[in-house]
Image 1 (cartoon, one colour):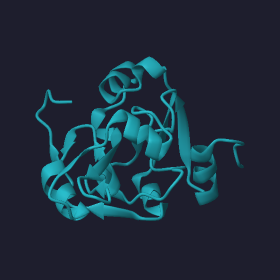
Image 2 (image 1 turned 135 degrees about the horizontal axis):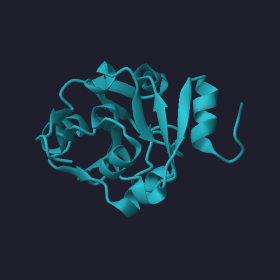
Image 3 (image 1 turned 180 degrees about the vertical axis):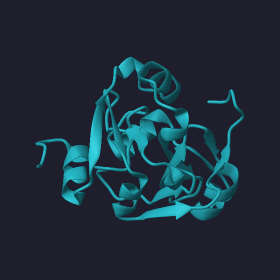
Image 4 (image 1 turned 90 degrees about the vertical axis):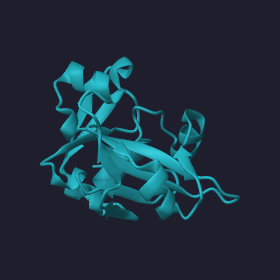
Length: 167
């Protein structure tokens, strides 16, 4: 069933993916706050992080990593982008490219195709909670559903385990 004017839910429906929409207080959308407030294990929460290579033609990728990990921007990401430097895209750049605010970014329903790189640790979870396209909701689904995305690819060691108290 399609959802009028909701590209994220439309995309999930088009792909026929079983998922749960979880309501979220927009003030609690950032991962650490969300997990604490809603009793979600950070190991079951995946962040969608837009990264950009520093080059004349700026290459992008949307990376999905568990909240217990840190994206290897200066190693694996930079090399995969084929640039000498890479960085997290800023909030304005992320909103411009994805149509979503940080805290709600998801690989579903993007206005333009962006490669989606999924850290292999994400695929080890039974289900993951990801952004829902806005700060007022999250999506829970089996990680195999992420592979239905065009341009999605599982990448070994895309992220590193974060220190126990690191967020």
